[in-house]
Length: 97
Image 1 (cartoon, one colour):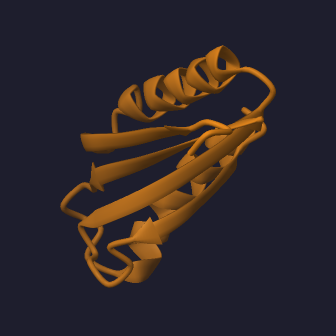
Image 2 (cartoon, helix red, strand yellow):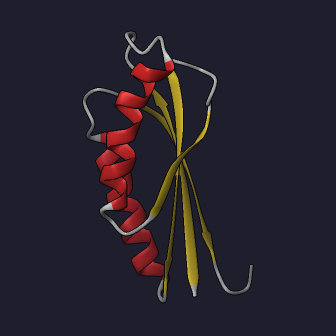
């Protein structure tokens, strides 16, 4: 069993000056990520209006499948024109770790 995690650090548009506006950007991204059959949620920068951190986790029988799913998730987030992807931190957890 292999698990993979990714943490996406996002810069939101200037009009996200309230938590309601922030949610209007974050919720559709999280919903789109879940179509890849991953767990996804806003996990950081919860009190910052112009930033968001979205975490993704996936479990699979093969490491290559975990990498492919995380690659797809990263492409989806990077291709969103309304946000800027500042960084991605990924980690593959193997049975030995």
